[in-house]
Length: 158
Image (cartoon, rainbow, N blue to C red; front, side):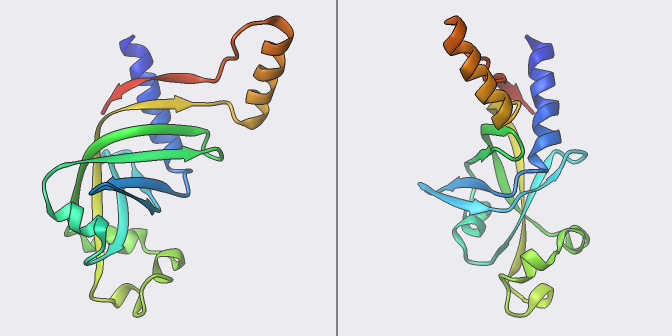
């Protein structure tokens, strides 16, 4: 079972980078955010503005949930972890993009730009073979009365 969890952990880090958006559950609300995965540091970075719900959640202690459901990344998950404000201008410069710039009137120079670091601790992950593989499994299940194989699934610790 440990090998399976390690495999899912590896799959998570390899695929989360392909996810275009995730939901951060903060203060009873779910917020769409663009993730920037950093497997080497075990962090998922987010760029936000000072005063947003995500920023406020990062300034207070507590557990945060990250929900990912991205068919393009073939990854689904419910992951707990911590969210903090990161004082790392080099990392922010590395991650900065036209997509991030669109949210800030003064671009990277906007004084409200903040970098957040989500450090996952545990979660439940589903890794699929994609839509075509899923449709094949559904068709096969209907012809054979077998349960469809929806992919890899399990609990992981980070």
